Length: 324
Image (cartoon, rainbow, N blue to C red):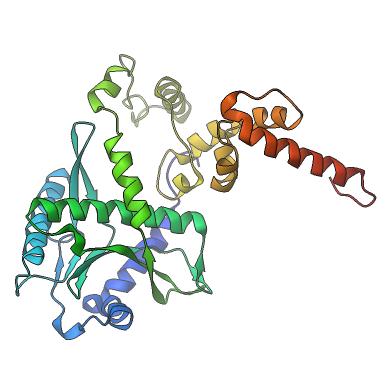
């Protein structure tokens, strides 16, 4: 199956989010009550997700409404809502307006605004998959940063936005929701730097070869082989960036994974290894450095670790009972 993201992932995610929000957000409000002391009787919930069309115009309208609602909260309007489902936040990236749809909610309690993320991966004995948790917290950090910017734009104090995220996930192997309150201040600072460093969109577009696009790949009347060839030609021209997390959300993930394997990209073995190979272009180069190839200046730190690991490995093979 070369195209499409995991249908199981989407089905489980939709089922879990529906469970958390069913019966007028009953389970969600119970979590907020138990973890934050949120008064369920005083809950004022607005569902922006269901109130607008599911297109770009709908995103613009929801962003405008989100800004208005955050303005009421920042002014401490007694009639302001305290739970926003489907908030949309906007910012300029590379000279172009970008819209970000918060997965779940923004909740107000005790004068502070919390950004929440509903994810369907399990948390077992208080621990979730580090990569999935990190990705969810990066999303929450983006939303929290943009919430700060929106609150500032409406004349409010950005300090009302909590530097903690509400991560709502299944507990253990079932679908019973649990909520973790996790610090995201450092992630928010990183988001700010990344947005500031984003290249200009027009400059990127100017570097795309003439005629490059998804038109040929999207031609439904074409056969699969020709559509795959068109995608690979496009990726040859403009590049791609694969991570294992792409398999959960991107329809091109399997194609990019195949290309990553062919190129020996370190991303195919996960983010932990990537962090140990700064400056190393691919796994073939990592193997060369482990056997003593002269490193370039960016490769030196990784080369020392790789050479040490190779010596340990070779010594283990020479030891009686050692296993390759």
